[in-house]
Amino acid sequence: MTESRTPLSPVTPDSRPTLFSRPWPIAIFIIVALILDQVIKQAVEAYLPMEEAVHVIPMLALYRVYNYGVAFSMLSGMEGWFIVGMRLVVVGFVLWLWRRTPKDRFFAHLGYAMIIAGALGNLVDRFLYGYVIDYILFYTETWSFAVFNLADAFITVGAGAIVLDEILQAKKRDR
Image 1: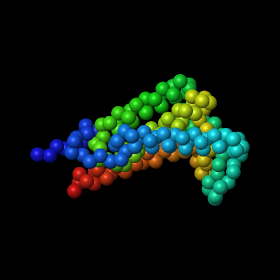
Image 2 (image 1 turned 90 degrees about the vertical axis):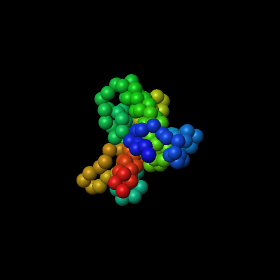
Image 3 (image 1 turned 135 degrees about the horizontal axis):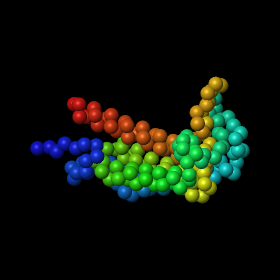
Image 4 (image 1 turned 90 degrees about the horizontal axis):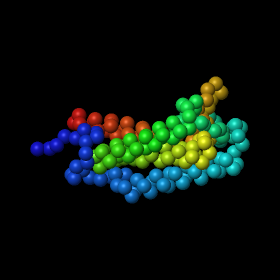
């Protein structure tokens, strides 16, 4: 008799572990992502003028701003302690999900690692400066997207990886 598992069922011994279901690879990924995020932000602080677009290619510019909220400037009117607390809760929740997700779910584990790395990257900024350094701007002649950073991209792509994992799991169940 085979045991059916839900997306958050405990890991079973028969599930084959993926790279990011193991503690060391996920820790190394998060550390490397954090270092990359912080090195880029330091370069932005040192070399990119404040609120001046440096056009890279059509529809992409570097544009340094300070974000006092969360991803894409949401909640910018909230107190700093609230945002820090919320980020810590998110990291704790994602760690809980990571531990509860079956080890064979590669994209889910990759997504969790990316979300944790992104949340911690922005948390480091919040602790060091009281704001987050944003610098990536997508735009057209009539529209522009919120300015964001690599940590925000990690969070967004990580969420996408988790959604992809859920879609793949649903297709497996439908077979």
